[in-house]
Image (tube, rainbow, N blue to C red; front, side, top):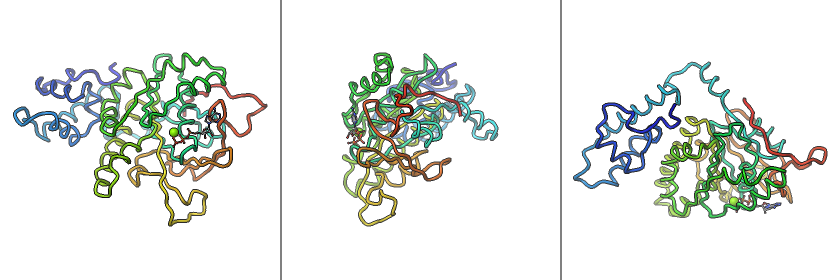
Length: 345
Ligand SMILES: Nc1ncnc2c1ncn2[C@@H]1O[C@H](COP(=O)(O)OP(=O)(O)OP(=O)(O)O)[C@@H](O)[C@H]1O
Ligand SMILES: [Mg+2]
């Protein structure tokens, strides 16, 4: 079985010359091709080739993307356009959940951070977004020895390996083993982030990842597309990025967690404590995320609010941050929680 659908050569009746060009623009596997959209692909294609080498149109590209999707369906990696609700439930049962490090936070989430989903962690500076990402790196207890990689995309140049080491050691876990399975990708500009996400299928395969973290998803786009006149383009780019992440989370049965910044919302009062702030990125971010969790500081502790979810009611949970990373306000029996568990649905 090909986890990424295999190489493009598996596609029959396709011009080899065209396949070469796709590889040149970073489309190396069938899932790279299937998780792209024809307009995206065409844009990349045209921006990489001059007029003399073009000769490709929307119809050819659409046909090719469809062919790649059909191959993934044949391989059982994605579902047919129509599938029974029973089959969907079967797929949901393959879902895994990764612990946040705090039992109460996990039960607030219904068991932990899910695969086949995008989880957005929004909050102001120091609210614990990165600490949650670090703790997840440690507690995401992969039951499979092979598929236990983590991809950590760091767009803020803030990743701290020593903090992960500390969290692992405080939980009595083998920090070396944990650090070995985390693959960090540092990103400095938005086009770089977009390129990495476009090739993410390959990296997921290469590192056998079950968890992808992006800390943060929006900071580079926000900084680079600052003016009103570029807002539409920024939103369009973010939209493409998030849709690709959604497809990847489903195809590979992986958990994708990204952090988001907040922006001031001075003119409203919702009466729920985070009236003056809202998650950045507007409706596009709001609609793309499966779960939206908002973190707030509360003295030395933190409070998480579920803003949006297909399964959870509006709810809140308190937690704290210590040497062990994210943890319960009161540790049960004075004992420290060790690594979290991965459990079925
Ligand atoms: N070793 C530690 N022990 C206890 N608390 C810690 C430790 N390290 C960090 N913290 C807590 O975590 C906070 C920082 O949280 P974090 O880095 O997750 O913020 P963030 O939400 O990612 O902010 P930003 O938007 O600036 O990236 C610190 O203010 C501190 O309260
Ligand atoms: Mg941070």
